[in-house]
Image (tube, rainbow, N blue to C red):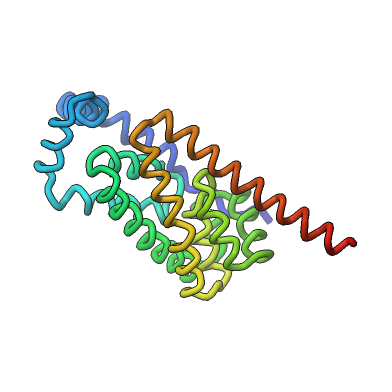
Length: 223
């Protein structure tokens, strides 16, 4: 039997962006914010931080919570904004806190609604792969995915809840894996080009290490 269809979130997001682009005031505001964020003048970024006050970090955390249950949303956007606006230390605190809150929320959604909801929110193929990884490695799968920023840790949160993985070991693995990965990604996010290459390089290094460990264990078992 064919599984539930995936939510058409990509089309909805494109629709929202199209509506914003058609509105002159919204388009002008977005362009002004973009120039302030990515321009060479730090004073414009500091002005945005002062203008938004406490609502800026809260908005970033809310965005990360939405991304935790709607994994199609771009996770890197919050990280880049936090790094550009708040610098490394405060940006790290915002992203790390939002990551752990998002992990708990995603776990709760997966636990409450089960595997069918995970596949509907994240897609059949990715959900199946991470379900297999969780069944094979348990909590270690959470740590592995957290250490590879190119993978969708948000989907693993949902899978962990749906598979009945114990909550506190899941959160401990999430906190441990997210700590170095968040620090590195927030630092890399200060430069978009550095973010792309650094994220890919870290994921490749962790993937090669995991593959090497698997090969070594298989060789010892065969011997």
